[in-house]
Structure formats: C-alpha cells, structure tokens
Image (cartoon, rainbow, N blue to C red; front, side, top):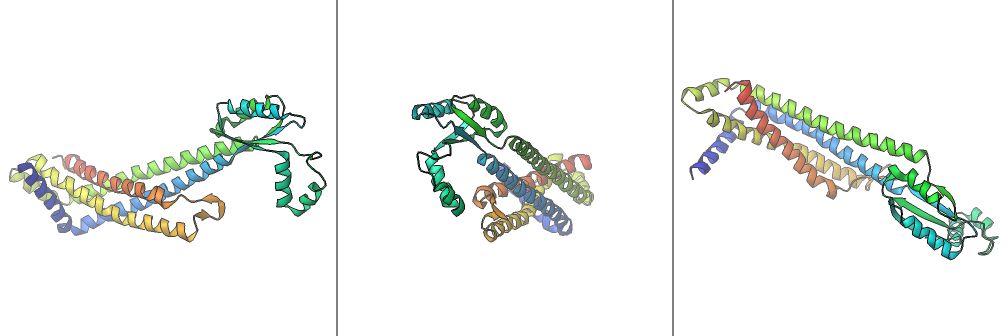
Length: 299
C-alpha cells in the first residue's frame, strides 16, 4: 500500500507541477508537438514510398515466348521447369489464340489485321507470364528460363528493371534514414527543452534537498512530469496526422495522381503510427526529464 501511495502522490505532484509551471510546460509540449508532427509526416511518406516501390516490383513480369513448333507436352514441360526454379512466385499460361482475341478486343485496327488469321495461321506465339519473388535476381532467373528447351525469347525490360530496383532500394534507405534522423532530432530537442524547464526550477529542487528529500524522491516527480508532457505533446500530432491522412486518402480516392501510385490504406498504418508517436513522446519526455535532473543539475 505504501508503494501505491508513493506512486499516486508522485503522479499527482507531476500533474500539479505541469500546471504550476504552465508557461514552461507549454514550451515543452509545443516542442514535442512540432517535432512529432514532422516525424509523423515522415513516417507516412516513408510507408507510401515503400508501398509504391513494392507495388512496382510486384508488377515486374518476365514474358516467356515459346517456339511455334512446340508440342503440348513440351509446353507443359517448360512450365514444370520454370516452376522448379527458386525465384518463381507465380506463372500464368496464355495461348496464342487468347492473345489474338485480347489484342483484337483492345484495338479495332489490330483487330482488323488479326481478323485475317485463324487458329491455324495465327502468327503469334504462346507465352508464359512469370512473376518473381525477388526482383534483384530477375536477370539470373530470366537467363535460367532462356536455357529451357523450346523457349524462344525471354523479355522483362532488362536493364531498365535492374536500374529501377536499385533506385527503389536507395529511396527506401533514404526515407528510413530520414525517419530515424528526425526521431533522434526530436529526442535532442525535447530533452534540451526539458533541461531548460528544470534549470528554471533549480531553486525548487535545492529546497527539496535542504528538507532532506532523497535523490530518488526528487527525481521521480520529474520523471512522471516528463511522461505527462510527452503524452500531452503527442495528442495534437496524432490528431493532425491521422485525420489529415484520412481526409487526404478519401479526397484522392486512395490514389496519388494516377492509379499506378496507390496510397496506403489508413486502417493499415494509423494505429501503429499513433502508438509510435505516443511512445516517442512519452519515452523521450520521461528519460529526457530524468537525465536532465540527474546530469544537468548534478543531483
């Protein structure tokens, strides 16, 4: 019961201290709010960049054209050989007749040309559409498919795909570094703001020491005060980021400029984002306050 009473009194003192030193508390909360908004925006951008790059990579397809004289058994064997490769995610067969009909439906001009051919005289080739698990290995996979008997040609946008994969990898790393960097800057700014707050209350701490308060007893209220400041400072960023992103998502129907670039669904990101922002605010506020008392004032 004594421990519970001490914790209760400490938390109560923390709340009283926040309101008693309202102007300094407001400065700390404002610092936390501004920096967490930047962190939240960066995380949202990072998640959407990652989704865009992942979507592009998933759409990369190897088109495998089959020799015109390949028999049904040979075509099936080609499929078995492709499936046996390590990097294969999915494979789909399109007959030359299916391709002819699809192309005819897509364009009236092409339809008129291909309409002169029937199933027996169709000049197109049967093909397999192959998706890979790892686009970084797509060149090696395409080369392996090319070696299979009765495979005529393999196309996947060679050269361009590898460059895109490299660019996407760099973009992911840059966005990750930016987010981590902002979190570090946030921790630094919040910690220094709290140090200034505590420095302005040095007399209060000295009085507590003169009346015989232990170091732990002095530090604990500041620790909980930091938690309160961090929590209060995270509320506004959470509100702005979450409702702002939901509004943007609904306004743009989940896409950015073109259907190729789709936004991350708010349901898949906002809960984690709320927890991240609140955790950063509380943890940095608590430990920033604690270490500021312990080191800055040399208690």
